[in-house]
Image 1 (tube, protein in one colour):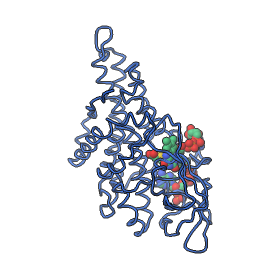
Image 2 (cartoon, protein in one colour):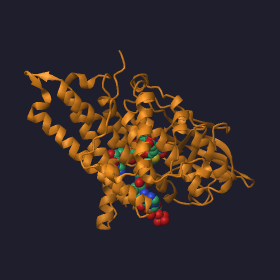
Image 3 (cartoon, helix red, strand yellow):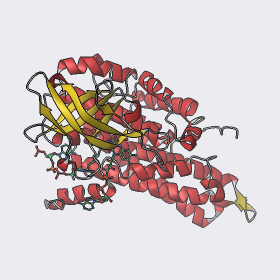
Image 4 (cartoon, helix red, strand yellow):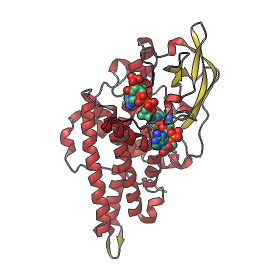
Length: 395
Ligand code: TGC
Ligand code: FAD
């Protein structure tokens, strides 16, 4: 089947572009052009084959999508959070798995190395991760500890020399099968959660691939298995202890998802709008029927509200004033909006909506992971509930 031309333009019903700088718009254009040239033509086939397009690792590095907010001296982009959000929006417009690759690398691997690591760790890992020479992954979730990571069992014991011995297992880890390094959260002898960098070649470390996913098929997911892995103590992050370490990374990554999921929604809206003007039934374009207009009008309304929410969230991030609960609200809202828009868009395309000729069904299936990972929809609702009532529903 011949590849369809990707003529995506993002909706801008409330002139949100006026709030962006010229640099923001240039970044958007460059990532959008990349997605049109390198992602749209290939991604459906990779998703159908459940294969990770490994060539994107270097491409995303070259484009500056890995660690855009990390300072330039470590290979990052030194950019602001609106720039980062725009990148995630455009990447997820192509495919959530592509955005996932960049989110994990930037927010969950490079951010903790930069924020919690020492100078030697920063210099050793960040430039190679920024350029895409190395891919990293983030291991928090375990088979029996997903929403409640505080109960994790993975642990390391002090060997009394310059090393520790790591044991345990993580599951559902994005990028794991292709990662050179893993940022792993594990308990030390005192029972404190610590971050430790595990390298692929370390003996006893393996990353079995997770198969049979119906979602994020073009993203590689795997387990991290640690069987008496000897890790140098110099790989432990010196500057953080406790669950606030991984949760601090998640605040950055959830912020990216708030923008990213709206990118997927924009793609579905754009396609449904175009289709509704071309598809003729009962002698006229289906876009002329009130029921279809209702769907389109509601889609663009929700996208516009989310765009404004994301922009404001980005300014709060830039000013260092954001709260994790605000990020939770935006992540939850974006996932809900995007999921609903994908479903409505799919219906608007009738039978064509279920085919790979259009990206809608792929986005829809991807979003079932996005609404679950980085904190489920219900967990984010409870975070908002706790924030507004002061009462903790988790404990
Ligand atoms: P709790 O006692 O509330 O908090 C422990 C400490 O952490 C602090 N904290 C945060 N810090 C920074 N950012 C946040 N978002 C934070 N949330 C909490 C908190 O202040 C406290 O600090 P301190 O100094 O007092 O120690 O912790 P809890 O055990 O009661 O758990 C709270 C809960 C349920 C909200 C948390 O566990 C949670 O968010 N669970 C969801 C787990 C999750 O999101 N997992 C994601 C795994 S990674 C992933 O999915 C990557 S997918 C990537 C991709 O492919 O794109
Ligand atoms: P559970 O925690 O078992 O939750 C099951 C259900 O119970 C959910 O609906 C949940 O909302 C609900 N629930 C749980 N607790 C409560 C409560 N207190 N009140 C009400 N309802 C509750 N993790 C990583 O560490 N790194 C990664 O790179 C990563 N990538 C992922 C990629 C994919 C494709 C997927 C699907 C997951 C990934 N995850 C990753 C794991 C992800 O973060 C977890 O799946 C998620 O946090 C939920 O954990 P769980 O699947 O164990 O569900």
